[in-house]
Length: 341
Image (cartoon, rainbow, N blue to C red):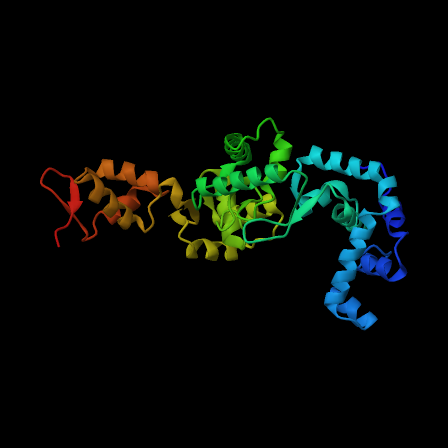
């Protein structure tokens, strides 16, 4: 995206500085061949001075670069960097910006240096809600951060939304803040500024604290696998689905154990699991019958069988056997009801 040579530009900008100032900036930004960024403490120990003194040298050297003839001569390069930055959205997380503009670690360090000395660019450090971000228009950044905050509040705790719908909701909030007409790609980059919303491996967005977004273990991968499938699956199929969708090794026995432990899953047949959020009731067959009779009152056997089979993949005979449990009694007209305690 950038047509000028990053390292040559950096070399020219540092060329007019005294030796120590040039070395401090080179070490602080990782501009040497190794690309290693050094701390204030380590540089201070090398020179036998305090970290605060190194900080002062760093700040003074940055200002000296900005005021130099070299900077003025290379203004066209900073203008090009600003145009590229604006085309990407004008406000981006540092990681997102570098992934777009830099080809390798060395290039990343040089871009950070140019952003730091360039008078066009400002940054805000990482905080509780947002990642480190750079911007050329502070008013735009304020509007984006306000929309991101409102977007987080608008999403239910465990709700997941498809990316297209999530971006559409974000665009509406941006429009309310006076920002409109931006590309979907720019909006996706702005989403990456927030630390409170995120995307799971299936491309669905939600709050990062949701286990459906921040995937930690086999249970979470199993949840996404079942959700993508849309209907009950045998635990062996779930394990296979995890491997196919996410490239993650999942042993059937381990997957089965994890499904048993998690209340998000309901055993609906021999080895078959469904998501509770689909409306399946937890418990064995007699528990399902109990819940049906509590909600609907006395029912004939055929009615109970039909309703139970919405909840469980079991044979009619299995349901009939469970109706003989002492939990249930049969009325004179042949219907079943809950036994009186």
